Structures are given as C-alpha cells and as structure tokens.
Length: 453
Ligand code: ADP
Image (cartoon, helix red, strand yellow):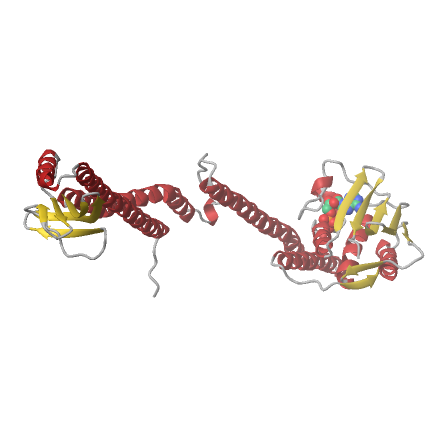
C-alpha cells in the first residue's frame, strides 16, 4: 500500500530537499571561490617575491658582492629564509634551510614542498641579467591558508545540516500553521449533519484560499439546506394534501355506514368516494412525476415537431374540458408550419395543464385563446384567458409546488396545486421558458418561449 503522507509532511520534505540542493550548491560555490582566491593570492605573493630577487640580481653586477647582497636582502625581507638562488653553473648563491630547488626543465613553475615544519608553496623561475643567468626559488608557507580553508570547510559542512534542520523545522511549523484552518474546517464539517445544515463554517477574513474554501463550503451548505428544506416542505405538503381526500373518503364511508340508508344516499356517498379517489390518484400521479423529475428521471427525448397540428389537437381537447360551460376556446395559428424541438406527450401535457387552468379560472362567457407565434428569437405558444386573473403578489409564486392563490376555491375547482410546477418542469426540459402575466379581473397569459431550432 502506498504510504499516506500528509500535505504538511510532503511540503516540508520538498522544501528541505530544495533547500539541501540550494545549500550544497551555495557551499560548493563558496568553497571554490575562497580556495581559489586564497591559493591565487599565495601565488601572487610568490611572483612578487621573485620580482624582488630579480631586482637585487639586476642591481648587482659584481658577482662577488652578489651573495652578500642577496643574504642581506633575505634577512631584511619577511620570509626571506625561504629562497634559493643558483647561478648558471648550478652553484648555490643563497640557500634555504627549509626548501630546496628541485630539478626542473620548465622555465617557471609552481610547486608544493612538504617539510617537517609544514607545507610550502614554491615558485621557481629563471632570471637573466647582464651578469648572467640565475635560477631563483621562492617559497611561502601554505599552512595559514590551509588552516583558513579547513575552517571554512568545517563551517560549511557543519552549518549545512544545522541550517537544513532549523529551516525544515521552521518549514514544518509554518505549513502546520498555514494548514491549521483546513483542519479546523474538517473538524467543523465533520459535525455538520442533515439535522444541522443551518450551521456554517467560520470564515477567516484572510482573503486567501482558506477564506475562499470556507465560503465555497458555506455556499454549498446553504444550497443543501435549501434543497433539504424544499424536500421536507414537499413531503409535509404532500402528506397534508393526501390527508384531506383520504379523510373525506373515510368520513363519508363511516357516516353512511352508521345506519341503514336509502339506495340513493349510498349512491351519492359512493359518488363522493369516487370523486375523492380520483383526486387522490391524480395527486399521487403528479407527486410521482415531480419526485421522478427531482431524481432526474424520466429523460425526455426531444425531436423536431410541428407545433400547429399539436396545438389544434389540444384546443379540441380544451373544448371537451370546458364541457357545458359557455367558454369560447379558439386557436390563433400562423399559416406556415412552426417547428420546435419537443417531446410530443410532454408538450401536450403542459399545454393541457395551462388550458385546464384557463378553463378552471375563467367564468362562463369568457374567452380562451391558444396562439402560436413564430418570432425571430424562437417559437412562442401562449394560453390566454379572460378569467379571474392572478394578483400581482401571487404571480411570482404560482409555479411553486402546492401554491394556490385561493385554497378553498381552488380545491373546489379540483386543482392539486401542482399543475404549474409540472408545466414549469416540462418547459425546462424543453430548454424553454414559461412566464405568466396577469391582471386581476381581466385575465392571464401563460407564455412558453422555445429556443430557436
Ligand atoms: P392547480 O392544479 O391547483 O390549478 P396550479 O399549480 O396549476 O394549481 O396553479 C397554481 C395557482 O395559480 C392556483 O392557485 C391558481 O389559482 C392560479 N392559476 C393558475 N392558472 C390560472 C389562470 N389561468 N387564471 C387564474 N389563476 C390561475
């Protein structure tokens, strides 16, 4: 199984790794620069020393005085005991007790000589003056330089792990601090359940990712809370709606059975029971449809459909719905065909729901018009009536489930309060919009606007 590393540990590990690489590069760079420059300065000193000896050699033309001059020069110069001068025959003119000239073919050469008293950097060169050819060796102790370099090396080697350790601890602490609010969010979110959806996470005013995360969480909680509220409201409303017809059926049956009745009374009671059962069946079917709609079912396959024949059909059905009531139901339809992307049975159902409402809420003598309009933005179907209308305050709520403008009157008319919610859902499935306009006492218009096909 893959080891589960916390973000904190991963951050610290990466940070330490990068830091280690950086420190190593930095240390190596420092070491190279310092060692190179210290050694170069030794060589420069030697070149200077050689130049000094050359000056003495040039200034003295008398070979007899040369030894004297050079010895004097050596004793007067710091580090003068570290030089050797030979003439062209190889005879020592000045010698050093510490370093000695080695056989070398090259004209000028740097070297290192290890002696019991320490390490020495040497420089051997040929000097030509008027009096002849000389070979000169100058040397300088390397020990102070090497000691400095070894101190630098120790400092770098020891400071790297210490700095790395301190920085890693600091990094771990910082990432712990930075991620602490995430732990806090996790802790708070863990205790939020379906019963406590109104709880919210504390939002730090930090303007960073944590603030955005808490706000996003809170937004999601608010949406969940609203959805759960809608669901429980729906369940409560549904049970309330179902209770009424069931209670009516039960009371009718109980009252009728209390004593012997005439066949006419029994018939009337059964008619009542049938009416309420029909209402209950309708309600249950509507509820089922909406529950399926909430669950994302059923899918509505859309196809290219000619609107006009469908609207004519619905208009005829509306006339049957109106029955004996004196309502004039007509269709206003353009001459040319109008096509929409729709699902035939669902579209019929939506139009019938709107027509049924128009019939229910339009008094006798009124007019209902089903019209089709092929506008530039897409087709529109409107159901308008000259009915009682909907008050302005109620208009925004008519598409809500179980919402009724006037409960008692609506129930008498046989409505379940779900018709417009179903119509709205069907419209949405058609990517269409369903809007209502109404003036109390004058009538209402319900418009379905289809998108352009
Ligand atoms: P129902 O199935 O009970 O009619 P709806 O969801 O279809 O319920 O309608 C919701 C509310 O809108 C009802 O209370 C009804 O009073 C009102 N309403 C719907 N259509 C019309 C209309 N054409 N004229 C007047 N009121 C309407």
